[in-house]
Length: 572
Image 1 (cartoon, rainbow, N blue to C red):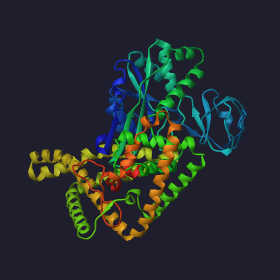
Image 2 (image 1 turned 180 degrees about the horizontal axis):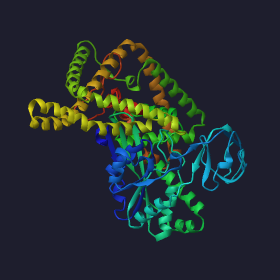
Image 3 (image 1 turned 180 degrees about the vertical axis):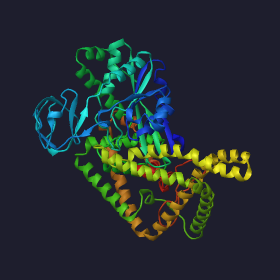
Image 4 (image 1 turned 135 degrees about the horizontal axis):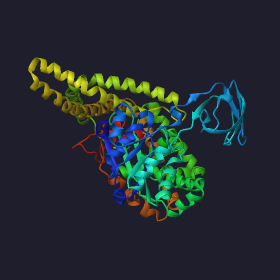
């Protein structure tokens, strides 16, 4: 399922062998792609993992697979929350909450809490009147006349009992401690449940518990044939001393473990304060990287993480702010012209008959592969259009119901997959029945299984055809504005020099043994001029090509032409 939806699934298995095969393990991951997160971890984790799943998801296709993989259902307060009448006002540091048009008398103190829009639930100590409450939890910020929801207190004793039972017997569980899925670029505050489960098992039975951080880094993860890097971090054994602290002071122990888990998770994911910063730092990485250096996916991610970390640490320095502004201006100029950075890179130039031959060959190949993809595309079009339409509808609904989602992209992929799983069998059966009506049952059986093979071939043909088509469009665009590309090329070279000088200057302060630690060595930067040039047209833009179905240093930019916006589409 995941192998079909994603074009590339890269697993960083460096620490996999360190995961104990028989000990109690809690796998913790970031939650940016709803049910696809669990599906990816289940498919590539060396242990049998039972995930904690929202009770409301334990039905339909998702519920079937959740039960199949021995998941643990969890009833969440937000799933049964009700909108409260009126609006509320509260002040930071004060335990008094007032309302307008509210009916606080109906609240069940101890069993219900107030959740202001965009805030965490607040427990109630005492109901003074219909319009005034005394709070048990002191608000961390102020708000005036905001809507709110009423949360019911959930009895989670059965959930904790099941988790502790599995951990005591050396089993493993999977949990996304952020809570619900989201599409932000940074981690949400972690929920205390994961700490209570791990420390509770240790305190209850004395079992040793390990925490394994799992980083799910998506590139156009909501799109069909996007890409993902799954990284397993080094297992962390929770100290026994922390379990002893838990017996005396649960709040302190859970706080310490949550902070540790957050730090562990940050080592395996790309996180940024906002999407603009993320995209800018990824562009910085691309400009910095010489064309003669081909990075593995793991190095690719790591270098982006380092640029983000370095920027966060030194962003107040004048030279960093100046460089940031230069990159931002360059990025905006590219966007205004409808170009990408790979169009601007210096390249070897060919012209005349060579250019005409290259365009002609790519055009013919483009037509051939798109024609080959046509039959399968037509037969699967009911699934594609229905899945896309329902996924967009679900996206809007999820966005409207959430306080943390940015665009609701985290629910799109899961909806597309579930709709496809439901529609594919009956559609293919109907096609097979039609064939059987005219040619007999043997032809019907052959056509049913043949449709799956045809669909796989269609995906490959469509990818190749769209790649070639996009590159042809880019060629003509580049030829049309060739003079402006020359000016942008000069700006790019200046920015590249500035970035490399800053790396050389700030690197030794950022990391000890910087020369050994750095991914791209100094000699690789010096050897850049010896790199094999890319084949391009005389518009000074690189023309990507692909051979043997593998990306080499000359053709890495080809990925950026794909409609599905794969790694380089997102990262540049």
